[in-house]
Image (cartoon, rainbow, N blue to C red; front, side):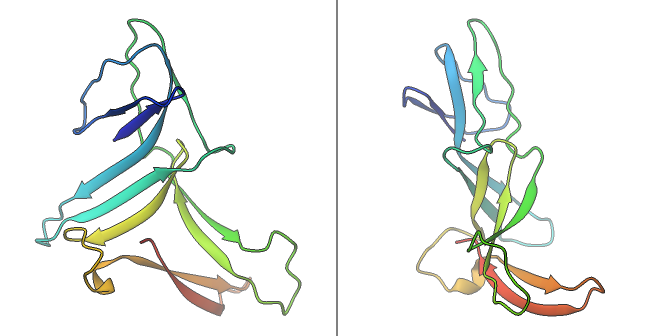
Length: 149
């Protein structure tokens, strides 16, 4: 976990439950990396979330003197599909959307893969999302594939 202050100073936490003394101020989560080991696979599943700057999703945590602040980086996960064009789409028009997995702290999933991170390895180790556009009856109108790398 990389935490940054408004003044640009940064602090790293490397394990759950770890505490870090920091000066009084406001702090935001910058990067959170999560590694999960499944009992049915020898390869770990890894996720990297990074902060989205500005906007309503960004959350700052105030730290006062002699205070401990607990942060839950994966609270309130939400999935969004953002249209590429902000205008209203009319019937029959093509629409392009970008999937985003976000946390309450304004972190967005940017990477997810099995095994060790190696940008030169085959793409088959990276995770992706299938996005389906369905009508009111649940019929698939179109679908596409999006990655998180």
